[in-house]
Image (cartoon, rainbow, N blue to C red; front, side, top):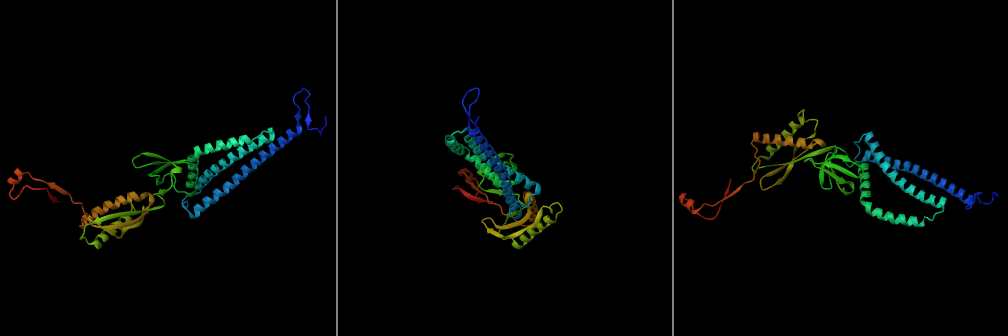
Amino acid sequence: MDLNDPIVNLPWGGAPLHLGGALEGSAKTVAILLAAAVVIRLAHVFVRGIARALLNRETLEGTARELGAAEIKKRQDTVEALAVNVIRFFVVVIAALMILEAAFRLDIGPAIAGLGIAGIAIGLGTQHLVRDYLNGALILVENQYAVGDVVRIAGVSGKVEDFTLRRTTLRDQDGTVHTVPNGEITVASNLTRVFARVNQDIQVVYGTDIDRATAIVNQVGQELADDDEWAQRILEAPRVERVSALGELGVTLKILGTVRASEQWAVGGELRKRLLAAFQEGGIEIPQPQRVVLAQASARESAALPGVQAGPPRDKRD
């Protein structure tokens, strides 16, 4: 056998074997596999660095400052796994096509064209799914909300019971479970982030001594903040901030205070209960809407009642 001849005739017959082409194809296959492995490995390092930088920035400057090290590591692993899996998919597909061309000398032009058409079709069909995953990754990195938070998203509100990169599951106060695709979330309102405000409007009738009513409200707010049961929930005692409106029924006082985020509803309810008792004790009147009663007496009833004449309906106000 001539070693310089790349073609070898097999002793049992059949098509001749091109050693040079086979060896060249094998070498290209190994090179492609090594290059794909290196690219995937570099993708791990590159994505890990980006995810760590994003989460560190959010931890220092953004909304993730209250997260612990374990939660940050969990979020980083989730984002890293998503990005690496996407890169790995494309690398494997490209490497497989290159191996088919190098080892088996296949014309991959039609295959690439077919994959392009299939990719367009799949992309159009799964664009909402891709958007869900990408938006979920951004929510995770930016720590817009987490499991246990009370949020308002996509027109619904409730407590976050579950969160994945594709969807968010909420349970509202009625117990109804809402599943919201992350791609539908354009604005996320977190109602339990660090602290919240007690923002209460209360009306008193015209003629009320506003300074006295303000003093009563401030006293009630301070007593609530000094109460051992509520002291740990209140960061700043509720007090009258200003006269916010002069309405048809009375004068509106704006009451503001700062509480721990998850306690805003409990503190607000207790404040209203104490204000009602304090106003009754202090003689501060809360306006009530007037009712209008329309009455019409018949001719016989009008004749029976002295001084009453039958006529059109009259307004009686109580």
